Length: 516
Image 1 (cartoon, rainbow, N blue to C red):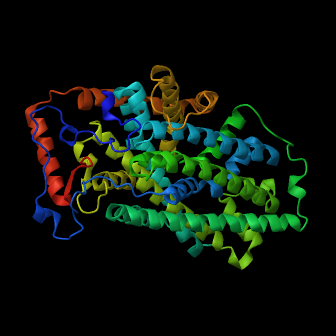
Image 2 (cartoon, helix red, strand yellow; image 1 turned 180 degrees about the vertical axis):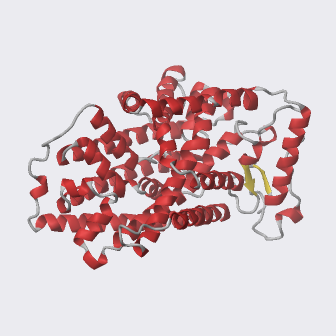
């Protein structure tokens, strides 16, 4: 694909020619352009000289809030169990949490270099597209759009729903009705999609509020645990490395730890909407990852101070068990904290992941309507609605976690490929402007670690990986029919255009414009 489709170190040149977005043949009619009456009469609908495009509205604090809020979801409240089971000891568990944080920081720094070199939203999709071309980028987009993103959103939303309802069903023999959980999951997804469709500032405010709430909840856990230690309860830290495991078990422990740190790359999905991305993108990453690592390590120290290894391994929700043992009548604080944390995580996913669909459509690899923007609200309304629709579809899948397991290898393969693209560009295009240039060993170490995770995950779950590979391969015929094949029948092109124009009129959406 032509390199000009992705902007390089120029924040004002991140938009492709909107007249060609998604066009299969040159004779396709131009996109519908709403009239002044369609746009409404409000004075703020279209200020003079204000192009219809995603606005640069995210400052440094918003970037930090987004990364911290997306990382701290359900993982820190649920993953300590799986990490301990596979690490085998308290000491080795703490090593896993620290190393996972350092590994995530290295990856985030690599993405900081990529994000300030290739100033395009879309994260690893845009980086792979620029470095390796259209087909590899589409395969990543295909799997991410269909499986990884919507299933991840649904799982986090279902966790929110469970912990909202759980206090009303305190008896373990009487779990919350499944239908209640699924309905509340749909409500959560729909509500946050509406907020993101209505206003980006609203969405960032929601993110800021719930990020503060979840950090405060973890501070309650940390302070309580440290007080417990100061009272002399250090018995769980005796012989910290006794019964430690190695080999594939440690690899699985790292999978659990890295799951809790997942989403450190989400700000890169919104690069074009960051104010002064050269400064704010790297600073947001540089502040967020060390902060989250410190919070995670201290939270685990608190867990191990209060709970024995056996109690922790037998718990399905470590934070809830922690609260029941330490807070007594106030134990309800913990399920409420998990619910707030996951609610903020879903909002962050809506805000960032929808931009992947938007960019994919802008590059002509998804229907062109997905790259359009609501005229008044300046939000990518079609991609947000599509994200919500797919996530709601997965609410009715019985074993949704299994679907996500199929593609754990693909997640690390895609992120590793993006950083491999960073290494390739260092060699192929050494003169590219790079406001940030890391020591070459950092991306090399990160790519090697990603390959290790892919290989060890394949060894640990070969059948899941095989199923994931087979589903991924379905992207190849879709690519050749939908993207590579340009001379489609005119009836098909006309039908696509008619549907696009209808949706434009319903939602008052148009292709993104360039700045004046």
